Image (cartoon, rainbow, N blue to C red):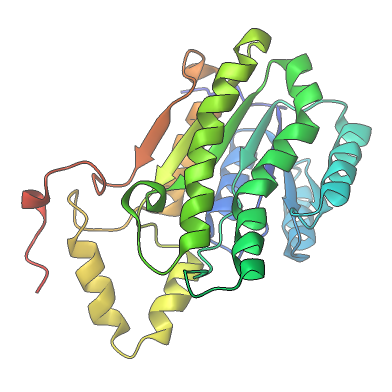
Length: 265
């Protein structure tokens, strides 16, 4: 299916993670579709990703940015517009489950909110004038933690709850401009960061096996490729009448009957 993303300017925050991360995988999938991925991230890894894309003939841009800083975020959008003159979609993909729980300081809690939800507001705010011109759309990457809780991560849970609230709020606000706003909700996705965490555990292999068994469909984690493919479909014209939706890419983790879960002992 042609997603009609060729030459579309797609801005992705949190897109300079390790190879195989959700953001980096989305960038690759966009390039495969002929889109022009624009990376917004504080990690200078983004320069290497863009250089690699350009070597294979893919136009791309990296705006190195502290996504919690409004001045830097506004500057990033200016850089994008100076080069391309338009923005067709924004994918807010920042997410760090930083463990800022009830025992965290005020500053730690606020920093978690700034990174995990305020950054979404900033990118969308500064990109909005150009989304209005293109009748573009917004996709927010969310987490099941907003709906299920997890324990020990008040900042991240509050932020991801806020992401879902903003998704629907923006869908209402922006209908008049023909702009769609949706969210992808992820449960257990095997990213490099997840693997790093597993490797810190003395019984990591057993923990991973136990987690996999809690996922009803195929008893496995979602791949970053599956997240990326869903993201591209939702921002594309093929999903042109979809707005205000929470799309769960989670193997049934959140909604299906617990009776489907294998014995986890």
